[in-house]
View 1 (cartoon, rainbow, N blue to C red):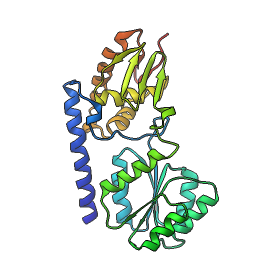
View 2: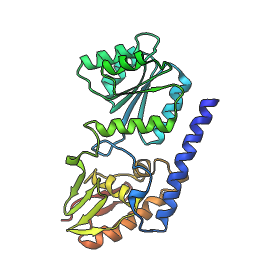
View 3: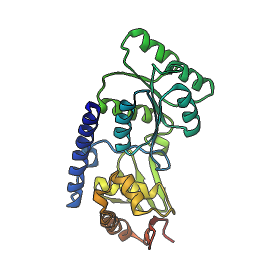
View 4: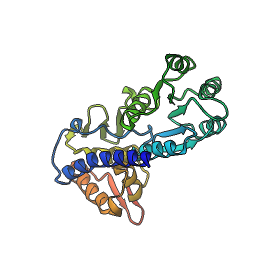
Length: 275
């Protein structure tokens, strides 16, 4: 019950932040995107970050799963070391939360075997132990960070975000910061969008929607996919919010040249270079 309350409090906190952003955007106000909460991380292709949580406490695993899925991430769970190894090898996550004390083989052994296989996924150790020896042992075998129980969900998520950003799969590397489709470019570092050299002012949500479209050029994206990726919850099933923001983007992007954002009736929306 305590863990459920913690999870609910975390979700409410996050939803308040995102709802305030949504209400601000609905007025189509022009505000600086650097003033909002940290943007949601994705893989380079726009798909959700993949996380494996390894812990034999079901209540704790459920708590972490709820928090990380609310971040928009794809989460897999494992309750022992052997299951962790098979899940990580098959799922190929971007980051792993790994408890040191497991019922079969310990987390240190799990990590040693992963590194021996050449799997360099970032690892955040999670344990009830708080001794210097445990910290040193975890980092010595190739761990990347260490959090002790009890912990703050906000802190744990922040540490995971930092690990992902430092990994080779993040979107924040200089080489991958600029996305281009035709004469449309989007810079994920400076939050600048230009078409044919003309700067386009976007709200935070418009920026996230355009980024998702541009990360998937020529791919038809359904309203459900867009809701899940951009908003991470469906506003009670009101898919009309997607139509509203697509219209906002069209007024700003398509007004500068031939249409790039197209409706595929019965399926969704697609962005492609103007012909």
